[in-house]
Amino acid sequence: MQDCGLKIGEYEIFWLNGGEFALDGGAMFGPVPKGIWSKRYPVDEENYIRMMASPMLIKGPNVRILVESGFGNKLTEKQWKIFHVQREWDLVVDLAALGIRREEIDAVVLTHGDWDHAGGVAMVNDAGEQEVTFPAARHFIQTREWEDIRHPTNRSGAAYWPVNFDALAASDLLTLVDESAAVAPGITLRLTGGHTRGHQVIFVESQGERAVHLGDLLPTQVHFNPLWVMAYDNYPLDVIARKQELIKKAVEEQAWLLFYHNPFLNACKFDVEGKLVEIWPPADSQGDVGKG
Ligand SMILES: [Zn+2]
Image 1 (spheres, rainbow, N blue to C red):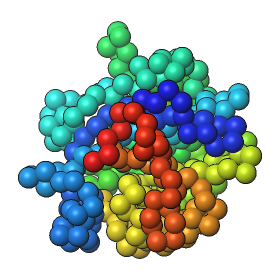
Image 2: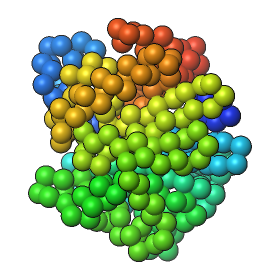
Image 3: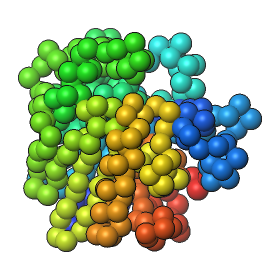
Image 4: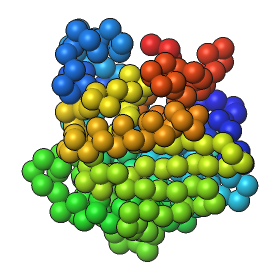
């Protein structure tokens, strides 16, 4: 973890360890032939590729917002194997390293309800009981996503797990969002759909500087091309349309694009052709994010 975060005006963004796993490269690059994507993303002999779950802490003058929550500490041994988990969830430890207790998080934003994003909102405590991980945080989820989470289908049930949401459902911490909402000054949410029906994205704007987290619409910088969608996307045509619109806007505004799954970069700025104009952490830093 870096000592200093990415500054966006009054806000500072830190990436934390929410777990590391490996996924099938073909699934992550959907319609793109392996001969093309494998030139740009390292792949092992079994066709697996490295993926992070890196929740972001957005620290403002009077607010601490967590975007995504990582795997949580409730995975079974079988799930560790299925998902090729390489590294455990240390979110609470990472927050402590920044001098923040989990009780001090004011808001949690979930782009969507898949286990690798939402697993950390409920945790097993020292007494072996399950509880909400961030007991003082309002948890922002799109209404449409919450409906789908609570009524999984035979496809979505593979990623929407009741164990991640039961404690939250029983609490008064859920803030359901219809289309758009403001979380704090300059921090707004917008429904996009695409990856899931109720997927949302987060915009950060402060003192003329901007960042946007496109969630699973843009898992890594290699997915810049709008047509490079994942086999995991439920509504790929919506992913393509939203990516086209939102990446164009980010390039025009010179906004940082923030990544959750990316083992190589935490954030970047693109030019119109998708070349990296600026990266975070900076290339000369000694952070623990590899360069592939
Ligand atoms: Zn994901």
